[in-house]
Length: 84
Image (cartoon, rainbow, N blue to C red; front, side, top):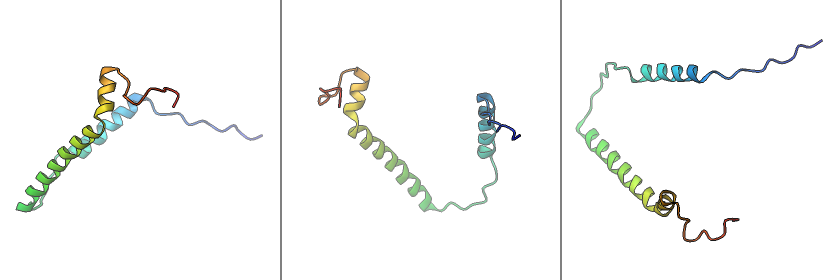
C-alpha cells in the first residue's frame, strides 16, 4: 500500500525574519574594498541621484490625480460609472 504524500510545511514567520536578518548582516558586513575610485565615479553617482529624483518627480506628476483622490477620498473626475 503506497504511503500518503507528506505536505511541505511553510517556515514560520519568525524563522523567515531571522533568516532575513542573517542574510542582511552577511551582505552589509564591512569588508576591505581594495578598489580604486577615479574622479569620474563621483559624477556618475551624482548623475544617478539626479536621475532618481527626476524619475520620482515624473512618476508623481503622472499619477498625481490618483494620489490626490486616494488621499482625499474623492473619486477621479472620469470615474462616474463604478461598474467599469
